[in-house]
Amino acid sequence: MIVGPSHIDLCTQRLGAPAHATPSSWTWNIDAPSGARAFVMTITTDVVIDGEPGTIVTAQTPQGYVEMHNVTGVLSIEPDEVMFLATHQGRFSSLVVGRTGTVSQFANIHASLLRADLTEINPAALLAALQLSLADGLLEG
Figure: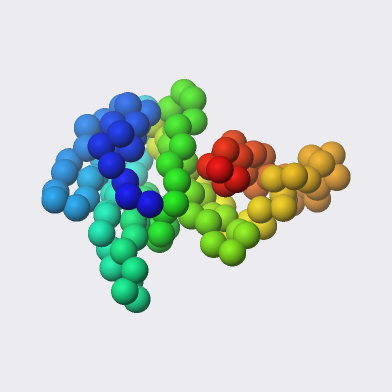
């Protein structure tokens, strides 16, 4: 997937902060409602790994660092979050960042959860299934 101007505009709008651009990356500094730095997010395009170009999204928080490779989709989540998706061989991972400083990652989730009856899913997998349902159109389309 090629991240383009519309994706950058979406991130800027949802996160409520301007992007600082270089030729192949964009960085947002997101502050928590308290005014403290919540996280720094960077999108880097044209990263070649093993001969294949891809996009990497990172989020650095006071608690740690999260990195997602080979982003295949970007989704706006109302009112103030952005979800980045990576799919590979029937599984998906997502990185969700929000204006209030939220950062969540779901990794290696089996796409069959998309079609599962939510009342029959083990509670340990329920949040991942709900997250996956938000990206239904990107995962199957």
